[in-house]
Image (cartoon, rainbow, N blue to C red; front, side, top):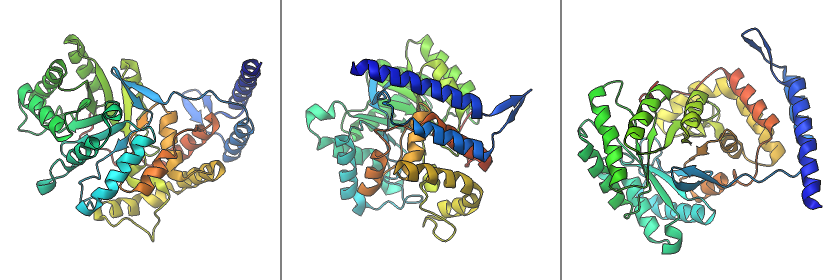
Length: 383
Protein backbone atom coordinates (compact mmCIF):
# COMPACT_ATOMS: atom_id res chain seq x y z
CA UNK A 1 0.00 0.00 0.00
CA UNK A 2 2.83 2.36 0.89
CA UNK A 3 4.61 1.57 -2.39
CA UNK A 4 1.42 2.28 -4.37
CA UNK A 5 0.88 5.55 -2.49
CA UNK A 6 4.45 6.71 -3.15
CA UNK A 7 4.20 5.60 -6.77
CA UNK A 8 1.02 7.64 -7.24
CA UNK A 9 2.66 10.59 -5.53
CA UNK A 10 5.60 10.39 -7.94
CA UNK A 11 3.23 10.36 -10.92
CA UNK A 12 1.48 13.48 -9.58
CA UNK A 13 4.84 15.15 -9.06
CA UNK A 14 6.09 14.27 -12.54
CA UNK A 15 2.93 15.58 -14.18
CA UNK A 16 3.14 18.81 -12.20
CA UNK A 17 6.80 19.29 -13.13
CA UNK A 18 6.04 18.80 -16.82
CA UNK A 19 3.19 21.32 -16.67
CA UNK A 20 5.36 23.84 -14.86
CA UNK A 21 8.21 23.42 -17.33
CA UNK A 22 5.86 23.72 -20.29
CA UNK A 23 4.39 26.87 -18.83
CA UNK A 24 7.51 28.65 -17.70
CA UNK A 25 10.51 27.08 -19.46
CA UNK A 26 12.63 29.25 -21.78
CA UNK A 27 11.04 29.60 -25.21
CA UNK A 28 12.81 29.21 -28.50
CA UNK A 29 12.24 31.22 -31.63
CA UNK A 30 14.14 30.02 -34.64
CA UNK A 31 17.72 29.53 -33.46
CA UNK A 32 17.42 32.07 -30.64
CA UNK A 33 16.53 31.34 -27.06
CA UNK A 34 14.05 33.60 -25.32
CA UNK A 35 14.71 33.77 -21.60
CA UNK A 36 11.77 33.80 -19.21
CA UNK A 37 11.22 36.76 -16.95
CA UNK A 38 12.50 36.73 -13.40
CA UNK A 39 8.89 36.58 -12.24
CA UNK A 40 8.29 33.45 -14.32
CA UNK A 41 11.41 31.81 -12.91
CA UNK A 42 10.39 32.62 -9.33
CA UNK A 43 6.90 31.26 -9.99
CA UNK A 44 8.36 28.08 -11.44
CA UNK A 45 10.57 27.56 -8.40
CA UNK A 46 7.68 28.18 -5.99
CA UNK A 47 5.50 25.66 -7.82
CA UNK A 48 8.30 23.09 -7.83
CA UNK A 49 8.80 23.60 -4.10
CA UNK A 50 5.11 23.14 -3.44
CA UNK A 51 5.56 19.46 -4.34
CA UNK A 52 8.61 18.89 -2.14
CA UNK A 53 6.41 17.01 0.35
CA UNK A 54 6.15 14.15 -2.16
CA UNK A 55 8.78 11.45 -1.46
CA UNK A 56 11.66 11.44 -3.95
CA UNK A 57 13.64 8.31 -4.73
CA UNK A 58 16.98 8.45 -2.96
CA UNK A 59 19.84 8.98 -5.36
CA UNK A 60 22.59 6.37 -5.39
CA UNK A 61 25.34 7.39 -3.02
CA UNK A 62 27.96 5.76 -5.28
CA UNK A 63 29.24 6.47 -8.77
CA UNK A 64 31.23 4.23 -11.09
CA UNK A 65 34.82 5.13 -11.93
CA UNK A 66 35.94 2.26 -14.10
CA UNK A 67 35.33 -0.80 -11.94
CA UNK A 68 35.52 1.25 -8.73
CA UNK A 69 32.61 2.59 -6.72
CA UNK A 70 33.23 6.09 -5.42
CA UNK A 71 31.15 8.43 -3.29
CA UNK A 72 28.99 11.04 -5.05
CA UNK A 73 31.31 13.71 -3.65
CA UNK A 74 35.05 13.47 -3.08
CA UNK A 75 37.51 15.75 -1.34
CA UNK A 76 40.18 17.71 -3.19
CA UNK A 77 43.53 18.12 -1.41
CA UNK A 78 45.20 20.82 -3.53
CA UNK A 79 45.43 23.03 -0.43
CA UNK A 80 47.25 20.34 1.58
CA UNK A 81 50.73 21.62 0.80
CA UNK A 82 50.05 24.70 -1.34
CA UNK A 83 51.36 27.88 0.28
CA UNK A 84 50.87 30.40 -2.54
CA UNK A 85 47.12 30.12 -3.01
CA UNK A 86 45.98 28.41 0.16
CA UNK A 87 48.48 29.43 2.81
CA UNK A 88 49.40 25.91 3.86
CA UNK A 89 51.46 25.54 7.03
CA UNK A 90 52.65 22.28 8.56
CA UNK A 91 50.96 23.31 11.80
CA UNK A 92 47.71 22.57 9.96
CA UNK A 93 48.49 18.85 9.68
CA UNK A 94 46.73 17.78 12.88
CA UNK A 95 43.49 19.42 11.79
CA UNK A 96 43.88 17.99 8.28
CA UNK A 97 44.04 14.55 9.90
CA UNK A 98 40.71 15.35 11.58
CA UNK A 99 39.31 16.48 8.22
CA UNK A 100 40.32 13.17 6.61
CA UNK A 101 38.89 11.11 9.46
CA UNK A 102 35.61 13.03 9.52
CA UNK A 103 35.09 12.71 5.77
CA UNK A 104 35.81 8.97 5.79
CA UNK A 105 33.38 8.41 8.66
CA UNK A 106 30.79 10.48 6.75
CA UNK A 107 30.95 8.12 3.76
CA UNK A 108 33.40 9.94 1.48
CA UNK A 109 35.79 7.44 -0.08
CA UNK A 110 37.41 9.47 -2.89
CA UNK A 111 40.36 11.75 -2.16
CA UNK A 112 41.93 13.58 -5.07
CA UNK A 113 45.55 14.69 -5.03
CA UNK A 114 48.51 15.27 -7.36
CA UNK A 115 52.24 14.69 -7.35
CA UNK A 116 52.70 18.41 -8.06
CA UNK A 117 50.70 19.49 -4.98
CA UNK A 118 53.40 21.05 -2.85
CA UNK A 119 56.68 22.38 -4.21
CA UNK A 120 60.27 22.66 -3.08
CA UNK A 121 60.69 21.25 0.42
CA UNK A 122 56.97 20.44 0.39
CA UNK A 123 57.03 18.54 -2.91
CA UNK A 124 54.14 16.04 -3.09
CA UNK A 125 53.13 17.02 0.46
CA UNK A 126 49.47 16.28 -0.26
CA UNK A 127 50.23 12.67 -1.22
CA UNK A 128 52.48 12.22 1.83
CA UNK A 129 49.77 13.49 4.17
CA UNK A 130 47.19 11.17 2.64
CA UNK A 131 49.58 8.26 3.09
CA UNK A 132 50.05 9.16 6.74
CA UNK A 133 46.32 9.57 7.39
CA UNK A 134 45.46 6.39 5.51
CA UNK A 135 47.89 4.38 7.64
CA UNK A 136 45.85 5.25 10.72
CA UNK A 137 42.62 3.82 9.27
CA UNK A 138 41.60 0.25 10.10
CA UNK A 139 42.42 -2.27 7.32
CA UNK A 140 38.74 -3.14 6.78
CA UNK A 141 37.85 0.50 6.14
CA UNK A 142 41.07 1.33 4.29
CA UNK A 143 40.37 -1.04 1.39
CA UNK A 144 37.26 0.96 0.48
CA UNK A 145 39.07 4.32 0.34
CA UNK A 146 40.24 5.43 -3.09
CA UNK A 147 43.17 7.79 -3.59
CA UNK A 148 43.21 9.36 -7.05
CA UNK A 149 46.36 11.22 -7.95
CA UNK A 150 47.14 13.39 -10.95
CA UNK A 151 50.55 12.81 -12.50
CA UNK A 152 52.11 15.99 -13.84
CA UNK A 153 53.08 16.12 -17.49
CA UNK A 154 56.58 17.37 -16.69
CA UNK A 155 58.85 17.90 -19.72
CA UNK A 156 61.35 15.34 -18.39
CA UNK A 157 58.74 12.59 -18.40
CA UNK A 158 59.44 11.60 -21.97
CA UNK A 159 58.89 7.84 -21.99
CA UNK A 160 56.09 5.52 -20.87
CA UNK A 161 58.48 3.97 -18.37
CA UNK A 162 59.18 7.30 -16.72
CA UNK A 163 55.45 7.92 -16.32
CA UNK A 164 54.98 4.47 -14.78
CA UNK A 165 57.82 5.19 -12.33
CA UNK A 166 56.07 8.43 -11.37
CA UNK A 167 52.92 6.45 -10.60
CA UNK A 168 54.90 3.98 -8.48
CA UNK A 169 56.47 6.86 -6.54
CA UNK A 170 53.01 8.29 -5.86
CA UNK A 171 51.78 4.85 -4.82
CA UNK A 172 54.62 4.61 -2.30
CA UNK A 173 53.87 8.07 -0.89
CA UNK A 174 50.22 7.25 -0.29
CA UNK A 175 51.12 4.04 1.50
CA UNK A 176 50.92 1.53 -1.34
CA UNK A 177 47.23 1.99 -2.08
CA UNK A 178 46.77 4.07 -5.23
CA UNK A 179 43.43 3.49 -6.93
CA UNK A 180 43.47 5.97 -9.80
CA UNK A 181 46.20 7.67 -11.82
CA UNK A 182 45.13 10.65 -13.92
CA UNK A 183 47.11 12.47 -16.60
CA UNK A 184 47.12 15.95 -15.03
CA UNK A 185 47.08 17.84 -18.31
CA UNK A 186 47.57 17.30 -22.02
CA UNK A 187 50.77 18.49 -23.68
CA UNK A 188 49.21 18.43 -27.15
CA UNK A 189 49.18 22.24 -27.42
CA UNK A 190 52.91 22.70 -26.88
CA UNK A 191 54.70 19.29 -26.96
CA UNK A 192 52.54 16.96 -29.07
CA UNK A 193 55.46 14.51 -29.51
CA UNK A 194 55.31 13.78 -25.77
CA UNK A 195 51.56 13.09 -25.60
CA UNK A 196 51.64 9.53 -26.95
CA UNK A 197 54.34 8.50 -24.45
CA UNK A 198 52.16 9.71 -21.57
CA UNK A 199 49.16 7.83 -22.95
CA UNK A 200 51.24 4.66 -23.28
CA UNK A 201 52.38 5.21 -19.70
CA UNK A 202 48.74 5.10 -18.55
CA UNK A 203 48.32 1.81 -20.42
CA UNK A 204 51.39 0.25 -18.83
CA UNK A 205 50.60 1.31 -15.26
CA UNK A 206 47.11 -0.18 -15.64
CA UNK A 207 48.39 -3.41 -17.22
CA UNK A 208 51.07 -3.76 -14.52
CA UNK A 209 48.47 -3.29 -11.73
CA UNK A 210 50.15 -0.19 -10.40
CA UNK A 211 46.66 1.36 -10.31
CA UNK A 212 43.11 0.07 -10.57
CA UNK A 213 41.89 2.73 -13.01
CA UNK A 214 43.24 5.54 -15.17
CA UNK A 215 41.78 8.92 -16.00
CA UNK A 216 42.47 12.30 -17.54
CA UNK A 217 42.30 15.88 -16.37
CA UNK A 218 41.80 19.13 -18.27
CA UNK A 219 40.92 17.28 -21.47
CA UNK A 220 38.39 18.90 -23.80
CA UNK A 221 36.07 16.79 -25.98
CA UNK A 222 38.29 16.45 -29.08
CA UNK A 223 41.50 15.41 -27.34
CA UNK A 224 39.55 13.25 -24.89
CA UNK A 225 38.08 11.21 -27.74
CA UNK A 226 41.59 10.68 -29.16
CA UNK A 227 42.84 9.50 -25.78
CA UNK A 228 39.85 7.21 -25.33
CA UNK A 229 40.39 5.60 -28.75
CA UNK A 230 44.08 5.03 -27.99
CA UNK A 231 43.37 3.38 -24.65
CA UNK A 232 40.53 1.33 -26.14
CA UNK A 233 42.91 -0.05 -28.79
CA UNK A 234 45.02 -1.45 -25.94
CA UNK A 235 42.02 -2.77 -24.02
CA UNK A 236 42.37 -0.21 -21.23
CA UNK A 237 39.21 1.61 -20.11
CA UNK A 238 39.31 5.35 -19.47
CA UNK A 239 37.60 5.82 -16.12
CA UNK A 240 37.28 9.56 -15.62
CA UNK A 241 37.96 13.07 -16.86
CA UNK A 242 38.47 15.84 -14.34
CA UNK A 243 37.51 19.34 -15.47
CA UNK A 244 36.84 22.71 -13.91
CA UNK A 245 33.08 22.59 -13.42
CA UNK A 246 30.91 24.97 -11.41
CA UNK A 247 28.19 27.57 -11.80
CA UNK A 248 30.94 29.85 -13.10
CA UNK A 249 32.50 27.23 -15.35
CA UNK A 250 29.64 25.23 -16.83
CA UNK A 251 31.63 23.01 -19.19
CA UNK A 252 28.59 21.13 -20.45
CA UNK A 253 30.50 20.26 -23.64
CA UNK A 254 32.96 18.27 -21.54
CA UNK A 255 30.20 16.66 -19.52
CA UNK A 256 28.40 15.57 -22.70
CA UNK A 257 31.60 14.10 -24.16
CA UNK A 258 32.33 12.25 -20.94
CA UNK A 259 28.79 10.84 -20.90
CA UNK A 260 29.09 9.82 -24.53
CA UNK A 261 32.28 7.87 -23.75
CA UNK A 262 30.83 6.39 -20.57
CA UNK A 263 33.35 7.97 -18.22
CA UNK A 264 32.88 9.79 -14.94
CA UNK A 265 33.05 13.59 -14.76
CA UNK A 266 35.00 14.77 -11.73
CA UNK A 267 34.33 18.45 -11.04
CA UNK A 268 37.25 20.34 -9.59
CA UNK A 269 36.86 23.86 -8.15
CA UNK A 270 33.09 23.44 -7.69
CA UNK A 271 33.16 26.54 -5.46
CA UNK A 272 35.36 28.44 -7.91
CA UNK A 273 38.23 29.02 -5.44
CA UNK A 274 35.67 30.24 -2.88
CA UNK A 275 33.82 32.76 -5.06
CA UNK A 276 30.56 30.85 -4.67
CA UNK A 277 30.71 30.49 -0.89
CA UNK A 278 29.18 33.90 -0.15
CA UNK A 279 31.95 34.53 2.37
CA UNK A 280 33.65 37.31 0.43
CA UNK A 281 32.75 40.81 -0.75
CA UNK A 282 34.47 44.04 -1.80
CA UNK A 283 35.58 44.76 1.77
CA UNK A 284 36.40 41.17 2.73
CA UNK A 285 38.74 39.48 0.29
CA UNK A 286 41.08 36.45 0.51
CA UNK A 287 44.59 36.96 1.87
CA UNK A 288 46.23 35.32 -1.14
CA UNK A 289 47.28 38.07 -3.62
CA UNK A 290 46.26 35.90 -6.59
CA UNK A 291 42.79 35.11 -5.27
CA UNK A 292 42.35 38.65 -3.97
CA UNK A 293 42.87 40.13 -7.45
CA UNK A 294 40.59 37.57 -9.09
CA UNK A 295 37.82 38.13 -6.54
CA UNK A 296 38.07 41.90 -6.80
CA UNK A 297 37.48 41.61 -10.55
CA UNK A 298 34.70 39.00 -10.57
CA UNK A 299 32.59 39.62 -7.46
CA UNK A 300 30.74 42.70 -8.80
CA UNK A 301 29.89 40.84 -12.02
CA UNK A 302 28.43 37.74 -10.39
CA UNK A 303 26.24 39.38 -7.73
CA UNK A 304 22.93 38.28 -9.37
CA UNK A 305 24.16 34.68 -9.28
CA UNK A 306 25.23 35.00 -5.64
CA UNK A 307 21.81 36.47 -4.82
CA UNK A 308 20.06 33.46 -6.38
CA UNK A 309 22.40 31.06 -4.59
CA UNK A 310 21.58 32.75 -1.30
CA UNK A 311 17.83 32.65 -1.99
CA UNK A 312 17.94 28.90 -2.63
CA UNK A 313 20.23 28.34 0.35
CA UNK A 314 17.99 30.30 2.70
CA UNK A 315 14.91 28.41 1.55
CA UNK A 316 16.67 25.07 1.93
CA UNK A 317 18.29 26.05 5.23
CA UNK A 318 21.65 25.25 3.66
CA UNK A 319 24.76 27.30 2.98
CA UNK A 320 25.60 28.76 -0.40
CA UNK A 321 28.56 26.36 -0.65
CA UNK A 322 26.29 23.37 -0.08
CA UNK A 323 23.90 24.53 -2.79
CA UNK A 324 26.74 25.09 -5.28
CA UNK A 325 28.14 21.61 -4.59
CA UNK A 326 24.70 20.01 -4.80
CA UNK A 327 24.19 21.74 -8.17
CA UNK A 328 27.27 19.88 -9.48
CA UNK A 329 25.85 16.59 -8.23
CA UNK A 330 22.52 17.41 -9.89
CA UNK A 331 24.43 17.79 -13.16
CA UNK A 332 25.76 14.23 -12.82
CA UNK A 333 29.28 15.13 -11.69
CA UNK A 334 31.33 14.06 -8.69
CA UNK A 335 32.51 17.36 -7.18
CA UNK A 336 35.74 17.45 -5.17
CA UNK A 337 35.61 20.58 -3.00
CA UNK A 338 38.63 21.29 -0.85
CA UNK A 339 38.68 21.36 2.93
CA UNK A 340 41.45 22.89 5.05
CA UNK A 341 39.54 22.81 8.32
CA UNK A 342 37.07 20.60 10.13
CA UNK A 343 34.49 23.38 9.76
CA UNK A 344 34.88 23.36 5.98
CA UNK A 345 34.69 19.55 5.90
CA UNK A 346 31.43 19.56 7.85
CA UNK A 347 30.00 22.20 5.52
CA UNK A 348 30.95 20.12 2.47
CA UNK A 349 29.32 16.99 3.91
CA UNK A 350 26.15 19.06 4.36
CA UNK A 351 25.83 19.11 0.56
CA UNK A 352 24.95 15.39 0.66
CA UNK A 353 21.72 13.59 1.50
CA UNK A 354 19.33 15.93 -0.31
CA UNK A 355 18.71 17.15 -3.86
CA UNK A 356 17.87 20.44 -5.53
CA UNK A 357 14.56 20.41 -7.41
CA UNK A 358 14.61 20.75 -11.21
CA UNK A 359 13.18 24.25 -10.77
CA UNK A 360 15.99 25.28 -8.44
CA UNK A 361 18.61 23.91 -10.84
CA UNK A 362 16.98 25.84 -13.71
CA UNK A 363 16.88 29.05 -11.67
CA UNK A 364 20.56 28.73 -10.85
CA UNK A 365 21.39 27.98 -14.49
CA UNK A 366 19.56 31.10 -15.62
CA UNK A 367 21.25 33.23 -12.97
CA UNK A 368 24.61 31.91 -14.14
CA UNK A 369 23.74 32.78 -17.74
CA UNK A 370 22.74 36.30 -16.75
CA UNK A 371 26.03 36.77 -14.93
CA UNK A 372 27.58 36.59 -18.44
CA UNK A 373 31.02 35.90 -16.97
CA UNK A 374 33.08 32.76 -16.68
CA UNK A 375 35.98 32.23 -14.34
CA UNK A 376 39.46 31.97 -15.84
CA UNK A 377 39.93 28.57 -17.45
CA UNK A 378 42.97 26.39 -16.78
CA UNK A 379 45.68 27.30 -19.29
CA UNK A 380 46.32 23.59 -19.93
CA UNK A 381 42.70 22.84 -20.89
CA UNK A 382 42.52 21.42 -24.41
CA UNK A 383 39.77 21.53 -27.03
